[in-house]
Image (tube, rainbow over all chains, first blue to last red; front, side, top):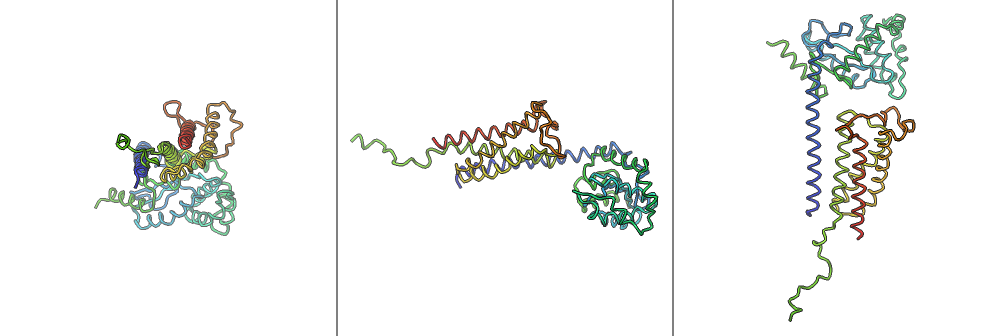
Length: 219
Length: 156
């Protein structure tokens, strides 16, 4: 190899190494900042309006910041449900609404209305199963959700009144405000007993839940 | 007798002597493009700054320079300047326009920005005056100058 090629490769390697180091340092800093943020704002994890899945006596609570139009939220839904089911009463899921996508606010409001009728899980499943049909990114048609819910035990007339109620809007507004406080900018955003999921991924979420289970149920 | 002891001039310049002086200019321009590209990716992918339309146009001019100048520098090929120069000049013009927008010399009504984020919104300021368009302007200016100098040296 000529001297020039060596110089070229060395110079490039130095820049790349500096970049990788910068990325690493920045990510560690961000993770620490988010942990501190969550610690300082523990009251935001106690909102009585939120729909839950699993018993309230569970000592490990997964808080999920959820957008009904988000594909990753849909992909995580069955896995998170299984995680709660598998722990038999030791884990509870708390759902917070952050309709970041254009057009998903109505979907979130329908889910809040479903919670009022104690149908949160079945309605959520229908909404997520039909996500492709109503949640197109360029042309969302959330009004179509009503059609998918026809013929179920969900009281549509009551729900249509509910989605316009200020109380339902207040739930979404509060959840959005809490997401802002915790610096949740993407969905799904997970916290387990108030600890943020720093490295995103299902295996990482499972690991965080297991870690909290060991702390909450030492035996 | 005397003439025999004098060292003979080589008929052709030895390959090790004029280590083409433009090469280091190319190397530096490549490094600037590389640092700028990585910096832009850091800002958008890690720090979550949404690039505005003008930022995107400048990225279109900057990102290929890493490859063009990189390959040119590595293979010692002066002709890469011909391909890199137009990109660098276009990027420089965009950066000038962007900076003028930023400091308010061009009314914001003229900006070609969509929903992605306003080109005139000051997102990041280091040391009070260093903004993203200014960094871009500095990078493109240096690349334009270095390429110009490299071309002059190569043709002389």
